[in-house]
Each structure stands twice: as structure tokens, then as C-alpha cells.
Image (tube, rainbow, N blue to C red; front, side):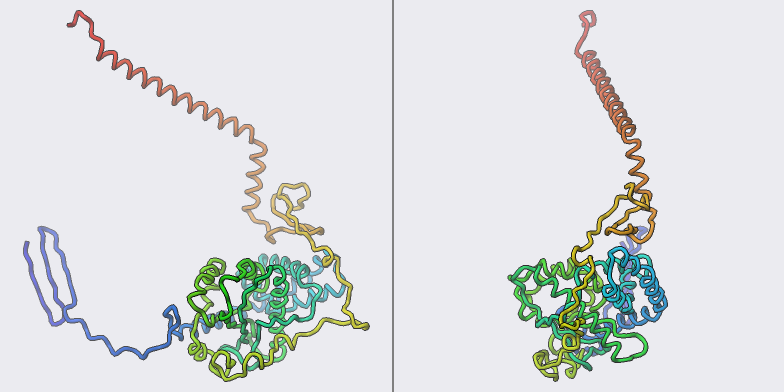
Length: 439
């Protein structure tokens, strides 16, 4: 073995030779002096820089604004289709009266809602139409007739001009534990989400802003009063999986306030329910970091701001909500469509049913005209139906062939075993048996 060394001013090189193998190893003998440490920055509990939160929100806001501008014509075309074609179909199917039809049309006139649904379906027109139809039927089941806005004491909307750095209104929600049955709170949550949608419409009408309208909220979730022992997990799961998807894209970011290690288990459950994109919009700032992002002028005193406390602030979410139409006698209109008295039961029609006008494709019906389940005819559904029909037609022949094949394989296996046994017995007999003449 031969070793050679060559030292430069900053780098040492050692060359070792083992026969024909040459190994070159370089190491830094005099590492450069590290630069001066940067100015310390605030970090959240996961070690992320606070400016990363602002950058993440800025990038998402720019992306949303560009998507709205690029797909505005597609949203207008989608709106015309659902108003001219989808709404009359649903009206005839459920025999809706004029009042309920007008209520449904007002929802379809909400450009921001249609854009969020189209965006949720990755700007695929057929999927968006299917989602709009299902959501419209769901709204008649859960939101018709419209009731007066029921104030939720644990949800507050900060009055204008209190917004985040990107002009989005700020919601403050004090999370509390629900000890009673979750069924009693579900209608309140649905009505509250509907109030959020209507409030965005009023904001855009009052501001008369050009360009991208206000599409989303940011929410401050105060976990101080949350008890992990009495939390209704079923209600949380239902809200995340069933209620919020009916109002897609309303929340841009969620800031967890007063978060502690006792809430780690709840966050672990939420991460399993929420999609990856939703998890990326959840932040855990301290009170100082919260003030740095929003500025104290945009926060109430409860969270280190200069505004009045939540109990003293005007809440436009509930006070500005329009009341339902009242008749001359002071009572609300009692003319409700038949869909309210008996909610439509959406039944699925088998692809091979003789009642299916789109034979070979899955179809659902709510008592009226059947419609394609996925809004279009998919090749995979047709292939699946053909395989089912082939199995029904040739099932006996296929099973007979399988049994014959298994019988042949069994016979061949037993035959091979029998031959091997005979050969083994013959060899044993040859070794052990020796005639007396040979001895």
C-alpha cells in the first residue's frame, strides 16, 4: 500500500492505493468562518418563520385571483347553463312553486359560489354541473324555507375595515365543547355557513370593487375553552366531511389561538379528516405573531389588538342579515314546495335495470327524470357492465371449465406422486433384495 498526501492552503487531499483501486478522499482542514448570525425572527411552534405564513397566504391569494380572472368566462357560461337547463329540470322534477324557484335562482346567481364549486371540481364543467345539482337538492332539504338568521354566540365577524393584509374579512370563533347530541347543532351549523355566504355577497355589493371580489374568510379559532374530554368528535367529523364541502372554499386560512399540548390529540384527528390542502392553511401563531401578521389595528383587545373587545364590537354577520319575507298578516309564507314536506329520496338505478334509459351506466333518480350519476357516460362504467353481463351469460360454462381444470390438475398431481412412489419403492427393493446365488 502506498500513501501520498498533498496539502494545500485550505484543503487536504489524501490518496490511498490498494492494488489497482484508487481512493480519493478530500476533507476540509480549515473550514471557512460562518457569517454573522442573522437577526432572529419569530417562529411558530413548528419552527416556521412568521414571514412564511404571510408568503403562503400571499401565494394562495394570487393564485385564487388569477384563477378567477382566467375562468370568469367559464363561470358565466356555467351559470347560464345551470339557470337555463338545470333549474327548469329541478323545478319540474320536484314541482317547485315560484317562490322556491326564485330562491334557488338567487343561489345560482352567486358567481362566487359557482366559481368555488368549479374550482373544487378542478374546472371540469361536467363534474361542476353534477355537484351544483346535488348541492341544490341538498339546500332544499336543509335550508328551505329560509329562517331568520340565528345568532351563534361563539362566532363573530369583525366589522369593516378589519381585514387581513389581503382584504379578507376576519372571523373569530370561540370553540366550545358540545355535551349534548350533535343532531341539535347540525341545523345551526348549516345556517351559520349560509350566513357566511350571504355576508360575502353583501360585502361585494357594498364595496363596488373592481377585479376579484372577496371570495374567502380568514378565521381565528380560540381553543381556550375547549375541553378534550367533552368534545363531540362526531359533530366535528360531520362538520368537516359533510357540512363544509357544501360551502366549498369559504375559508382561506385558520389561525389556532391559545393552542396547547392538550389539544395535540384533536389536531391528530383533524389531520386524518382534512385533505392535504386544508392542512397547509392551518397555522399556530403566538399572540405577538398574530399581531405582526394582522397588525394591532385589525384585532380586538381580546387578542392583543387595539379594537374594542368582541362583546362591544358590531357584528355585521348577524345584524346585517336580511329577514325572511313576511306576509301582510305578519306571518311568514307557508307555501312551501312538496320537497319540504317529504324530502326527495335519491335512489340509484342499476346500470342493467330495464328502468335505466342509459343502459350500462349508473343513474340516480329522485322521483323525476333519471340523470347520469357522474354527469357523463364513462367508459369504465360501460366496461364494468359488459363484464357483468358476460359473467351472467357464461357463468355456468366458466365454472364448469374451472372445475374441469382443477380436476385435471388434481389428477396430474396424484399421477406424478404415484409414479414417484413406485420409483422410490423399486429402488429400495433393488438395494435390499439380493439373490442367494450372488452371495
